[in-house]
Length: 350
Image 1 (tube, rainbow, N blue to C red):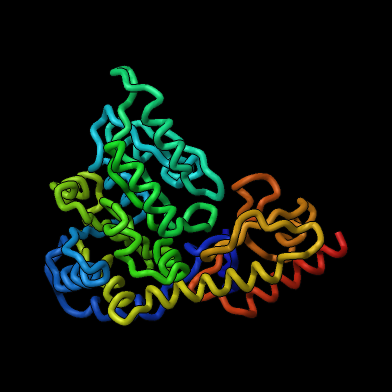
Image 2 (image 1 turned 90 degrees about the vertical axis):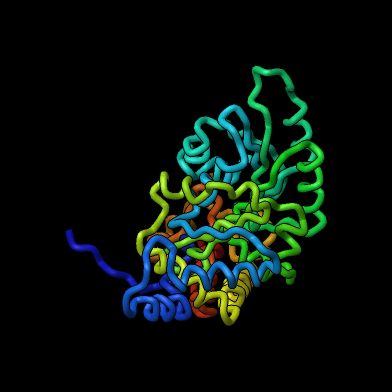
C-alpha cells in the first residue's frame, strides 16, 4: 500500500505540525560527537537550568517522551493506590490516556468534577471531597488542572488561585497538565511562575511537542519532596531515554531565545483570526471563547462532510457536529483564510 505524503497544513491537531527551526537546529547540534547517556549530558543539564531560570525557582526537572507518561507518573507521585484524583470531566487524563493515570498509580481512582468551558467548578471540588469520608471511599489526595483546558480556554489568575486555594484547604496536592501551557502563558501575558508555583501548583507537566518539538515533555516539580525517587518511576515506566539529549536538546533550542513563547503566541493569533473568520456565518456556532490556539465550531454534518471532501482534516470527537480546529506554530494566515473561505461558501449554499 502506497502512502501519499501531503504537505498541506491542516487543523486536525497541533501534533501534526513538523519540528520548528529552533528545535531542529538544537537536535542537529546535539547530534555531533559523543556524550554520556541517560541524562548525564550537558544538554539535559542546560535544559533543566533554563527551566529553573524560566520559573525563577529551584525546581526539580525530568524529561519524558510524551504527555501521557508525564501526567501519569507525576500524578502517581502525589498519591497512594487507595487515594483518588479529581479532574474536570473532559480532562485529558480522564478521556484520552487509556487509564494510564490509574495504571501507573496502582489503582488510584480518577473522580470527575463538572464546570463550564472546560474549567473545574471550585464548589465541585469541595462537594467531591466531602461527599464521603468513610474508609470505603477512595480518599481524595490530588487535583489535576488543565491549562489551557481541553476546550481551549484558560483559567484566569483569580480563577486558578480560587481552585488551588480550595484544593489546599481540603488537603489536596495540585497537578497541572500543561500540554498547551505555552499557549496559556502567551494568552495571559503573565510570567510562568505566576500561574504555577506562586499560585499553588505542586507539579507541572510542561508540553513541548504541541509547540513545535519532535518529542519530549518536561515534568517540573515545584515541591521537591514530591519528586523523591521520581527518576525510578521514569526508569520503571520505560521513560528514561538512553540518548536523553535528544529529548532535552530541543528544550534548549526553544527556551534560550524565547521561541517557545513566540510560537505559542503565533498559534494563538492564527486561532483568533480563524475565530473571527467563522463567527457570524449562517449555520456556524462558536462553542467556546477562543483564548488559545483552538476554535470549536458547531456545523451541520453536510458542511463537515463537504469540508472533508475538499481535503480538510479536523476532529469532531468532542460532540456530534462540533469541530475542533487547532492552529499550530506553522499555521499561516493563508491557511486560515482558505479554510474560512471554504466554510463561508458552504454555509451559504448547503
